Structures are given as structure tokens and as C-alpha cells.
Length: 130
Image (cartoon, rainbow, N blue to C red; front, side):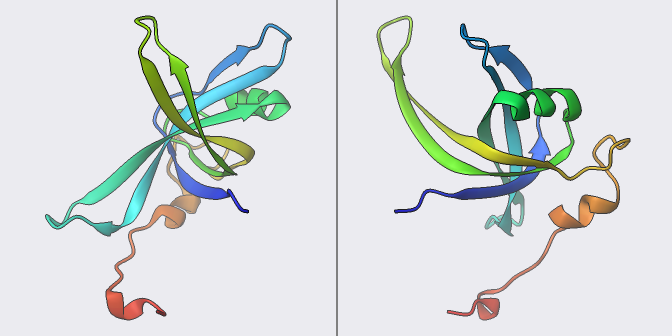
């Protein structure tokens, strides 16, 4: 079986770093990932995907990534449930990152030579190999 997610997008806000009671670092952030195709109205649609990263990599993410920076995430999809304060069952879908790569230049606020990665590309059904 296979559970693998690869995403490239921009952070919607600065990562949030916390530590478990055992002292393990955990960072969370949301990645905005544009869809390849436009909607029927001709607008680009974006998915906002929750990311969780652990241990030393979590600290690196918190120290070196910020809102607007371009990042690549390689990980797995996780769906978990919990009971909220009112006793209602809630479901959370998130990507648990195994690798986070920083794609924006070090001194950039989110724009720069790596912007081609998110460049808009037009595709038609004729371009598909199947």
C-alpha cells in the first residue's frame, strides 16, 4: 500500500512551533497550493493544506520559513478524529511531512528566481497521455 503526498506551495502564515510534554518539537503551517486547471469561471483555485512536521525539521521550519515563502513538502496523508470541548466528534485531515524543502531564496520575501515552479501553465485534455 502507498500513502505519499508531494506538494509545492506558499505558506499562508508563519509556522507555529510547539513542544510536546516530552520535549519533542512539532511545527504546523498551512500551504496554499494552486490547482493546475482553472474553474469554469476562468479563475485559479487554491487548496489550503494543513502540514505537520516533527523533531529537528520542525525547528528548522519555524526558524527559516515564513509567510509567503515557497516550500516543497513530501509526506503522508493523515486523517484523525478527536472530541471537541462540546463533545462533538471532529475530523482533521493533514499532511505529516517527512521532508520539507525551502524553495524561496534565503533573503526573499517569497518572490525570486524560484517563482517559475508555481508559474501558471495552461493544459488541455489533448495534452494528457491517456
